[in-house]
Length: 297
Image 1: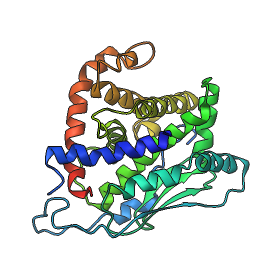
Image 2 (image 1 turned 90 degrees about the vertical axis):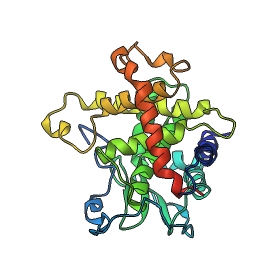
Image 3 (image 1 turned 120 degrees about the vertical axis):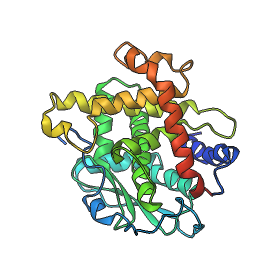
Image 4 (image 1 turned 30 degrees about the horizontal axis):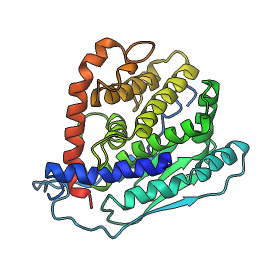
């Protein structure tokens, strides 16, 4: 089974896990700085003064689908990124996992696109998620430099984690989910949550664990390329890339400390943070199970 197919199986596992819980009824300096379309701020749902219904209450419109599309690539960087996505059949796998799992009120486009920069975003005005070809190419360069035996496989893992980050933005917008904290951090949480949710057999697939590790290594690579950060970087909507890397490792470790002890020390997760990760993961997992439950098929 390919990495993409395993990720789809893990996402489908959410239905099993949340049913058991009873929830289904009711860049120079930071290369991933612009992961939300600038139009997001103008697209927030209007709120009335009336008490809000619980998120998802009374809504059972699942008529929409996620529709994958590869746009043209003309630059060398875009052609490489498109080839990586197409060879892995990435967009088809990701859209299928969403269509089999989430109730979508209308169609959503999943677009592979030449952007002339390494980026990805959810656009609520166009109802689309875009994965730029150049981000895949950037990832390939990072994993090749790191000496990976199969840098393309690592790149696909990074793309999978990026997609589920953008899916976090999508579901927050689409279902008007209540969140506390910065949306970029919450979207990172969803990416980890989906990848680390056990499948129907009750186990987390090792390929998804590797996707989290590869995503953290990609953030580390971006951080190393950026060098020293200034106040503009630190004040941005995203946490610094190195922080995002430590967060991904923390949530992975916290989801199963016994199995992921290799993440502590040796240039990875500091022991002082690792001690907090079990509780951090429990709260993250509980929150997302509550938020997503009403919107699962």
